Image (cartoon, rainbow, N blue to C red; front, side, top):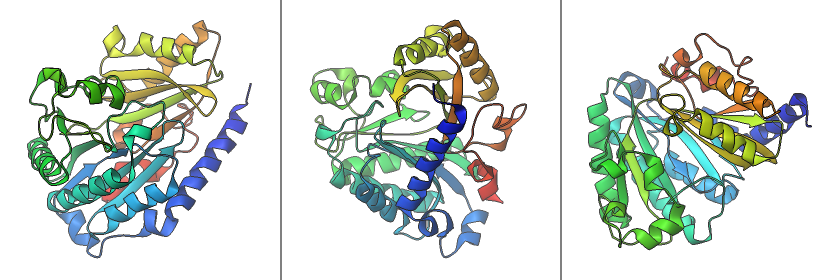
Length: 334
């Protein structure tokens, strides 16, 4: 079995690669020309997920499209080759975010061909999911309005099918992201024009090389993954079934088991950390893992979290070895 120290070293190596890939000056230090004004005005968070985690040229081009307007900040970035997915955490005013989203969706659609995509994470499109979260002086209603406006523009200007999900959903079958991307790109391509429930809210009833886009407003979501000391993904899948909401487990928790970096990973979304905390989730995984004769060896955070999400626990207790204060949202809002 790989020791926790060895796993930490390999994870740190991947983190260094990500910083080198995007350029630390551009990723963490490049700020809009009028940052003070942005920080005092309305502020919205956007956490776009792109279906590319391997080709640095594509990821860099998407990054450049985000920064081109000079009025949107990148607060965090991560990518994974097994998932074949990259995730950015962005912050901007609602008006600036509109144009930023159009730019990066267009660039992703140009460069990512979903017909050739492979990866363990479910997805339906190049710019796979685009959530809006209210941060400062904004409401959920404003984020819902923004998702509808931007979603319609994506459909009209880029000719992509668009699904409104989460708090923006207009149809019950689009409420859950997992339902929209069930079966992935291939299944949606077959069914989009054949099954009424698979039709988009906006855009064509067909799926091209760029796939579709899920866009919506939601509350804070914590993407939290736990690695086990085994490469048997069936263990991770069994634990995920035990703890997730849809199987009668913990409330407000989505979980699946995936093979990542030669290890079994329990990949999760915490939809309401105030009800189901990171500590509660980690302890549940520990308990279920012990029944199978395995143990958690490390965990990772994808994106960022509110400071309150760590109340009553610590990064050390959760085995979050690559965590620091830059991953806390409030650090960037001061």
